[in-house]
Amino acid sequence: MKQPVRVAVTGAAGQIGYALLFRIASGAMLGDDQPVILQLLDITPAMDALQGVKMELDDCAFPLLQDVICTDDPNVAFKDTDYALLVGARPRGPGMERKDLLEANAAIFSVQGKALNDNASKDVKVLVVGNPANTNSLIAQRNAPDLKPRNFTAMTRLDHNRAMSQVAQKLDKAITEVTHMTIWGNHSSTQYPDLYNAKVSGATAIDNVEQDWFENDFIPTVQQRGAAIIKARGASSAASAANAAIGHMRDWALGSNDNDWVSMAVYSDGSYGVEKGLIFSFPCVCKNGDWEIVQGLELNDFSKDKLKATEKELAEERDAVSHLLP
Ligand code: NAD
Ligand code: LMR
Image 1: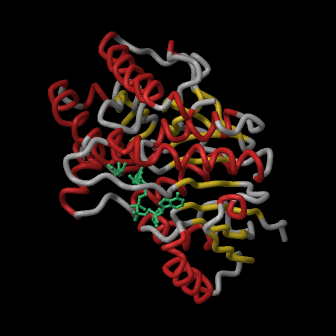
Image 2: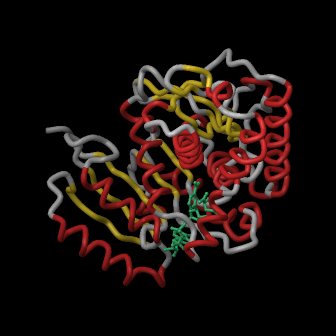
């Protein structure tokens, strides 16, 4: 039997938390031979609700779940943690852009970055889900000088999955036929879902769809999917977000598919001309518990313009929170 690993989840009493914790405890994230200890953080007024979630976790009698710690103290939640899923933050409502949350949520991530720095395992893998996810991840990373910058990531896997699903439905193909999808940039309405490098049944995706559909239907649909769900459900996506978080962490920890890549917002090393240090979504492959940006993809002028637009937005978001970036 493997030694248990510690998985911290913030915002654990919220709606994504409710869709996420049971899957982590079941082994869906780290494998069905990996025992886990859940370290759950929420704010003080949510402690009763969090205890209710713990009761339900207990009542599942998951063989892999060794302990559940509930706390309102980030230093307790992140103690020795190997994985940290930073979900806790306010979601947007109708008519808002995700960056409108910057002011409300940014402070959370500077506090939690410091708490990670002081308490977590030096190899902790951090996924930021709370919006605006890329910039919140940057804030956490910059407040954790003793941890590796490359261990702070943000979630664009939901956008990646959305883009795959749109293509599969458009071409009436099985989802497994859609591969090599890339979301470039920010988890926002400037993100660029790229069909020039994606494949359908092994052929270049863009060659199988009309240019007009790509530019005027597919791209805005993927960019605006979060808003469409908020409008329809009256609440932001939760089960699909939790599912994407599981996929992001599982691939990072256990390796991505050899014949494909995944989209992850990671620390930019300047690849594809993207400003170094931004948390930018790239095509990544994961191996041995680490990620690497896929190199050498072709970007035409259309794609380059889209990358520039989303890079510019990320630089603006970063500048707006410069007071939180030591
Ligand atoms: P929710 O309101 O249901 O839950 C958020 C939880 O976070 C609440 O329990 C709240 O008490 C808690 N919280 C607030 N401040 C906290 C703090 N300082 N420390 C710990 N916990 C805190 O929201 P949700 O639907 O679960 O969404 C959570 C976040 O995830 C939102 O910001 C949402 O926009 C974002 N989100 C991101 C993606 C993505 O693809 N990156 C997808 C869906 C949602
Ligand atoms: C999503 O993409 O569903 C989330 O980021 C929630 C939102 O605000 O759109």
